[in-house]
Image 1 (cartoon, one colour):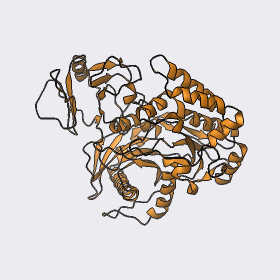
Image 2 (tube, one colour):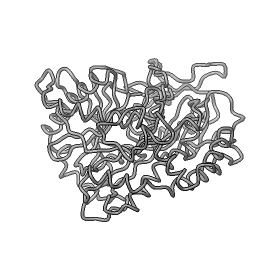
Image 3 (cartoon, rainbow, N blue to C red):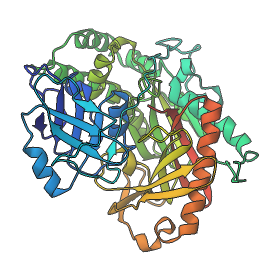
Image 4 (cartoon, rainbow, N blue to C red):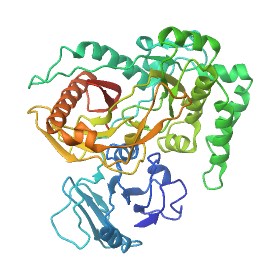
Length: 484
């Protein structure tokens, strides 16, 4: 049982070989738990964090028991256990910590017993549990590293496939089709499952490699990529090589013909978001949630700024945490490649993350949603605070409010402001938020989420991790991936 400030590679001494439960002071949502040590089996984070945040998703996927706690008395008790052998037990009701003998191998559990102990603390759902289902990792194979399907500058979203543009872009293509059919779908209670999707296009696999070739940097890139396969973490070699790779790639931009193609799809003055769609993300067994970059609030009216944003997304394939995450998953760095999903950015009143099977107790009848004001980055990142948390039954229409949002700020984009890849932060006035003050609105919104979640689950054939938002009266779905 050890204490660290953050979950970072190297934060856990390599001399520690036994299973470890970490006490962690802070998180920003970008951490890869197992990249800090394969022997980490549990994490106690001493700050509030949305359960369905990227870090929470990764912890579940890595089969790490992940709980959060900000209660001062409990934190004091937890600190007393540092260096001792402990047992961490978590359920939908409570979280227990207890001291065990050195030879006890059952360090973690998601089925706590009823025995009381001085460290037991009901945390009111302030934790995340790992998935009990292991899915095989099936990395998508791109058709070509240079000139996908010939040499397309970009693809319409309807042309995106797993092979040409990755699982995320392919799922968005499927979502577009499902959205066109959803206005005819209703739940058993007659609640509509209708949703919309933002317009989109894809800069496909091979585009980054083509840009490297045209810039004369392909040979240097390939050499660095070979070195990083076996580079060591301890001496800073991985960090150095990662920075060199990012420096090369971040200065790249798509060719003029790509910009011309995209201008035919999007109105010139519309604000866009450029998002990663790698062949090593949004897969069953490797969601890589939040691992690669998305750049909001860019415009084709400024091709240089747009191109720079695309370069940043490409470069995010080679951040330190991305490299170590793939290494931990047994994926060769040379096999990873990046497409870029370009979508119209929405200006939502609310954003949500929805799991179509309850992540706390794996109840298939219940969807759980976490909702934040403004843009969804509040939920995906490690923003301190609690979202609105709704538990919605797919079959009887019941909606339970598990928590109310207390984020102090919301992120927004204004069309009148600069398209510079930045967002505006505004103080939240919860007295004007219907989800806080209107019980009827909250129930109807939860029922709509349950209906949409059930529809997507049926069509994709498995439990889904869904991202979306509410714009006026319309629900938009922007992403759906296999739920960890």
